[in-house]
Image 1 (cartoon, rainbow, N blue to C red):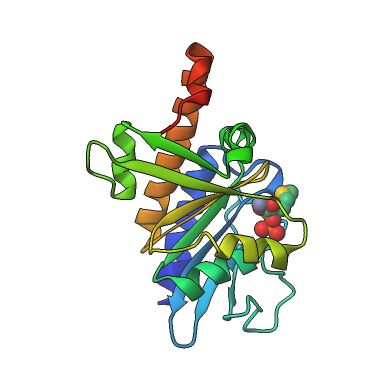
Image 2: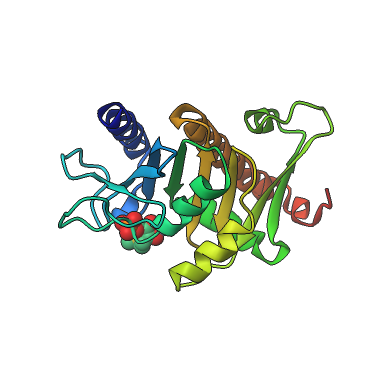
Amino acid sequence: MLRERWTELADVKDELAKRDWFMGTSGNLAIKVSDHPLRFLVTASGKDKRKRTAEDFLLVDEFGRAVEETHLKPSAETLLHVEIYRKTNAGCSLHVHTIDNNVISEVYGDNGEVTFKGQELIKAFDKWEEEAVLKIPIIRNYAHIPTLAHAFSEQVSGDTGAVLIRNHGITVWGRNAFEAKKILEASEFLFRYQLRLLEHKPYQLFKVV
Ligand SMILES: CSCCC(=O)C(=O)COP(=O)(O)O
Ligand SMILES: [Zn+2]
């Protein structure tokens, strides 16, 4: 099980790396290994996530602490992943910094959310009705990680989801790696679309959904 999950997460990491979504060692990824007790693999802190090595991940517990003696440090943002596994049945969670997610989080940050309506790709979030609205919350980028994790946790519900951290990045989760990656790709598509739209129709910024 551990080996399988490790390979699954390493493959996702390679795919996200191909998209250049790990600039400057940013980003962290996690995958659940067991529920009782909660154990998940998380990326080691400060590494170049574009490289595939035997020291990419470590196993942590329900407090985000390494389960075994190791020189590796869990991601600085492990507590956010802890909140996801504590509150939902998610099996995988992904965090990346991109220019698009940072700009969107700044443009809409004062609203506390960015909304999408009438865009086909919101179906990736299980929004199938014609009038459906997707809202992605935007939280403040607290430097104190427990405070950030608390603010993040308030926005975590359901087994799939996405939260933007202002001028920092996005964290998404899904029932498994496939679903988490789908949510991440769909989010980044929507952000790029919205930013491109604003270039052509700047008044869309003030549209109330
Ligand atoms: C150099 S990026 C700043 C830290 C961060 O936001 C991040 O996503 C990576 O931190 P980690 O400890 O997971 O490597
Ligand atoms: Zn980050």
